[in-house]
Length: 327
Ligand code: NDP
Ligand code: GDR
Image 1 (tube, rainbow, N blue to C red):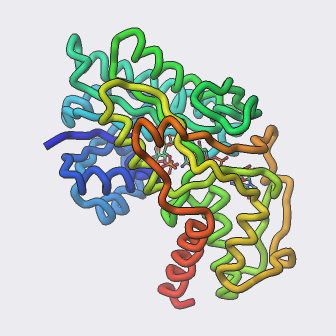
Image 2 (cartoon, rainbow, N blue to C red):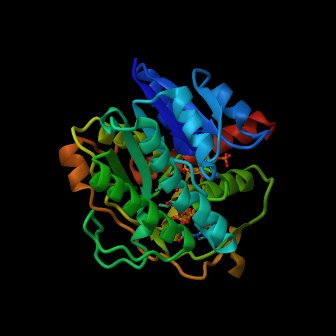
């Protein structure tokens, strides 16, 4: 039975990846931080087969201990401070977790595996935010990186450190440059879920308006369930490598609002949407659209859920959740 260790187990991707690996017959271990993590029960209910190990990406010895307990064949490093807007407010903490945390786990793997690094395969959750002020459209594995936030800068560090461990020590280390991926499990701070929850609440008469930031930014949004499958496929390859994972379609926040309000039968959303400067960012990533040709050809991967179906899935899930609470 193959064994996997996932950091970021409580997050959107950690849950989907756990489900995928458990279904494939893996023994799955998840790193969980904090002495009383409020998502402990969520993990237990959603993926009861996962074994949780206490640890934190900023604490190298806790990572070493987690590796010794899990004895993984595959490690998926999904843990991060992942909310871009927040990364300006806590840039140093973001660097400690999202950048140096990658070095910590790579180093822990090297110390744990000793001379036999070939026994462990490593996945790093890199991001399209690394492209930032895009230097090429669409973006592929060779596009120059130009991050626009402390989060983006931290992810660039993790990306190059992963490549460096591959080149320096021959580690089977892969970096997945994933574009935005969403689901009903997406955190409510991110724009798609904020919109799907807001639309459901407006439809139920529980909320009057939705307060947004920049409506002109464009993103390449896919479904998280598809994207964790790409992570797994990367680690099944004979060698570590870097892959862009994206749909290749881009939509603005306005189009997201069009699609989400349409699900509940509202065609004109203008009366329900306000803008507030507090949701604008000091520097914006205006346009992201990925070229995932390499992942499609080498990994035989492709997205299965389109933009309209993804938005419908999220809004309907939030409508159902509100109905279950009594409207
Ligand atoms: P989430 O924000 O949902 O989850 C982040 C996870 O990181 C949580 O489990 C969180 O745990 C954990 N974490 C935070 N700080 C630490 C720490 N100090 N030590 C250990 N774990 C920590 O992110 P997603 O699931 O959406 O994304 C997974 C990864 O993929 C992240 O690295 C993200 O940056 C990256 N990514 C995501 C994309 C997306 O569109 N979703 C696109 C590209 C990259 P806790 O619950 O305790 O806070
Ligand atoms: P992003 O996702 O920054 O791309 O990072 P987010 O959903 O937060 O923002 C997408 C775009 O929407 C605009 N926007 C708003 N965003 C939020 N959160 N709230 C608002 O009210 C709002 N109004 C407009 C933003 O300005 C931005 O342009 C996500 C995270 O998952 C990262 O961890 C990951 O690496 C990248 O996707 C790829």
